[in-house]
Length: 559
Image 1 (cartoon, rainbow, N blue to C red):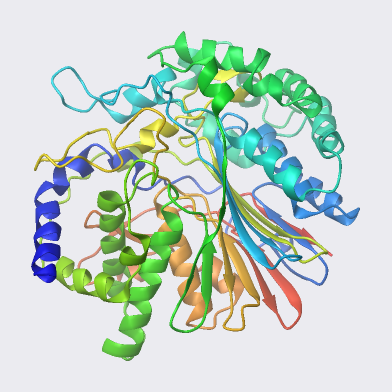
Image 2: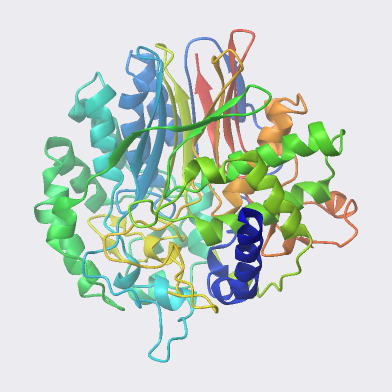
């Protein structure tokens, strides 16, 4: 009887899948023009003994390194790193967005997750992204302006994490970022590229300070309002959530194009969630740890690895083909989009959805069922998000992914930073074609589903093995799955795991990064840029092997 119920549920979801996918397509994958040439720079890979930092930008890497070098912990360095990224990569992450941190504390041998995901305002209408006739609005009609903005969470996450595990004073670790902001910085490639292709920012702000970068990209750029914000929050972060800056955020959101319903109470009452990380031991002994829901990444990657290992060990008894990798991803994304959501609103049986028999049984049904993909205008989405990872001299380990969602988020700009558009990570529809309520639908106070996947992996002896993560929207799951297969099953190097071509199959559509991959497929995919920003630190023979993806601006520095 139980099997019949599962089969019925899967088939009924397939019949409604087109409706729920068709208007969420813009969130599917987020390709971005590569900002680096494909030659591998020395600053992107290295071997270290004591400590190491990998971030998405050289300025952030250097500031994080300096803090670790003078004896700070990862909880000290991460604050400065994220605040620096908010300055030099404002299109990707920052004070107006959210953050997931996975942290291993060497003293207690515990792995903790700080989950700073933005929340929907308490006055949000569940039909916020629907027209009067019940049809969803277009993606960028939802993105631009106040209705897409969730309560910013990054600063409170950093503050609470530092309060728990930092050793240096709060104002001391922000000071080098204030100095950088005051002295100006040379715009990095990714910021220049993002501005060159940006369609909406300058319509909202014709006299934006960022026009200076387009006029003279080699000249130092100054964001004076950001400097002022840094000085204020270095003394008292309550100004951000209770006072002056909070009021400006609320006013910007509610008096913008497509105004939202954010309140000062939403800002004051926001709380991050500190949890034990979600950890799962695979059959081969490796333990995967990462954030809990509403980050879907940990669950999806574990599900994919369970399937991969079962096929490798029990069914195929050889290395699964690229086609099988893609089938696994297609299935995992289906499970993600139909079953996962904020667990404070939807009851989700984690033990069940990570059960090997459950996953394998439904995978076989999935492969035998034909679904129709309704993917349109894939090129319209741009990439945001930033990932960084570091290990200090005390053997504390941190993996963190932060984002404002779309490039430049909602495009709303206040106090020197952009506000997120994370509410567009909700499904725009409330119900699917069968009338079933969609789990990841908009609701007041709810956190939208995320694909951010800052992971820490331990070996069969429960010793640290590696840390990994990437930006890239829903494609994050594919990028990390590809790399973990390389490192956990194929004995490849960190360099090979990062630089090997990316691939993704989602909603029955296939995208590959190289024509060589396409030649392995009977039904060819679409060749396109899949601009991951993978950052990996692996412990090997007592050394820390670190790598930053050549597709982006990231660098490595350590001792």
